Length: 364
Ligand SMILES: [Zn+2]
Image (tube, rainbow, N blue to C red):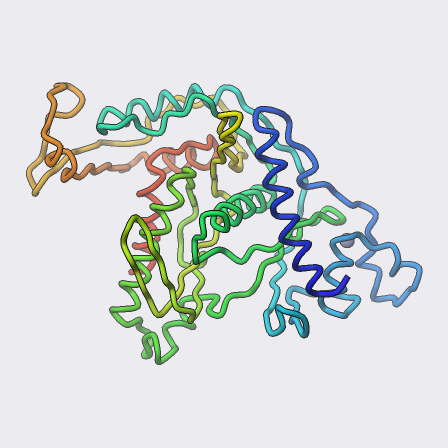
């Protein structure tokens, strides 16, 4: 295989994996994180020709891409259509490749979201035709979230698609491959005189980051994405022009923002033919939960508090309901809030909580 063929393989593999997940909603999903336990990549330093032939498919791809027998955490692509790009490999222990269907969570989550839907006009994310897949291995969860996110962004022509490429398991290690970004962290961006200098970002750049964060979370809310570890380390940048047409609004910026999922992220996927949803999330805790994770909810318009929420069902004028703002306070229930989001696949307040945390992490 040459480099171009390998990148083509990554593209078809992404589509194959997405289809495999989508077509098996409601059934057992296997073959997503299969293990090759006999790979002898680690023995290669002994320069043994026999060992060289006994390496797994994934490790062999890395060797082709790098032109070397021993691949560390980064590969510089030196030829082919991706020449000049850098591939970044994240390796972690991979103990389980199990996706476990949990039938109780639908009931729990629907009950929870029903309580919140009292404050909304529309029915709040209440999915009946949904299957919850618990993933014990958080790196497999990250891979599945990346596959779904990348595929839907590709199909919906979202311009700031994440740079995930491929994942494979070898000798009890999970290997996740992605391209490196031009600006892997915000400090590099701050030092660049085009975007800031003096360790501070320009106001315009800050505004561009806020705008793209908002557009991203509005787009990904259709898939009930919860980031669940919102902090600046998941924000990556490039100096490419960002040209977005979203919800009828034209938007342009001199910088592109990419939001990477975390090992605790969760996302839903819809199979329109079967009319079924699946939800994927990392779960380490399995105890029975009956929590209400909000301390209070208030509705406000123009600074005046509206006490008329769930207790009095009075119809309002549309312009009134469109303008009102719903505030929620986590207070001393923030640990429970994160627990149910991370471990129970809950979609609770999926579009606003992560966005608010990212904005706060940028301002700190
Ligand atoms: Zn291997």
